[in-house]
Length: 139
Image (cartoon, rainbow, N blue to C red; front, side, top):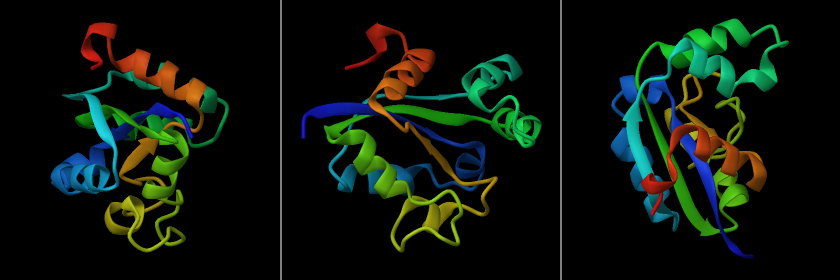
């Protein structure tokens, strides 16, 4: 597979629970290279724009509230087959269904507070990375 990039966010619950270091360690030991990273907080407008694909879903308002309640860690990761490999690493949305050893199995509390976001395609990885990082912030 070709080396590519994916986008991730460590969500407010992961930051609040002090899991930044442990999650980053899993990312590093799984062969990903961090090419951009920052601690930031999404505004309501940011969250509504970032998650616009879900704006007709019944959970949209709760999602926006959750994503704006505290800081997040935004990061761009690089590895061969980055999108697919990272999705495997973070696991199923429902931590009860996530495979052992995955980020969500270890650190997510629920479907709604599931510790991390990861891009679902190469195209979305590029869009999501550009949403959070200027070109000069990517290495």
